[in-house]
Length: 210
Image 1 (cartoon, rainbow, N blue to C red):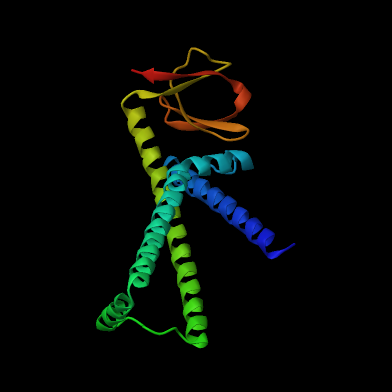
Image 2 (tube, rainbow, N blue to C red):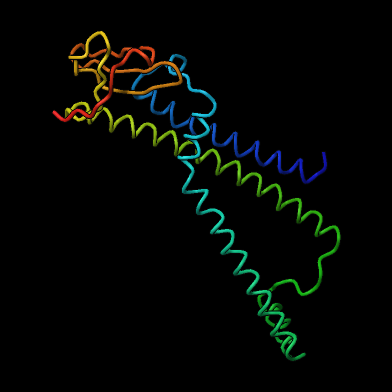
């Protein structure tokens, strides 16, 4: 395996892990408010990754656009400076004098300065990336909490998705909470209890507006 293929594999693995963690943080924030059992409502790998992708879709759209914008600005600046210096030798002198006034470096850095400067930049980038990842997970968990609270408010107002079980299709008091890969959870409004059942037990799902 060459270095490029290793980088690609690492990038794919890192993105997959982030999507998995994003969905898990959101789901367990949601479960925490509703007091649902995550072991009973387990999801398969594809469900988790797809949900994580939906949660991050805006970031995946904006991130390349922001990077492209920054690269364009930097490239335009370099091109303009190069053209400015190449027109007249005096322009280069003016640019050097301006850098001196602003206390910017006017000479190339030594090999040691470049080495440790690059190392410092890498580690600060890693630290910033880890911080942003954990902040994102906190935000996703908060979104799950808010979604669960909105569901509870809807149930209190009589606006919820009603599940009809096969053995009692006339009962409309079961509010839909969540479905995993095999099992689902509903809340019985009349007796104030949460029930779990396998997915093939319910008849249909409809929106209740009471």
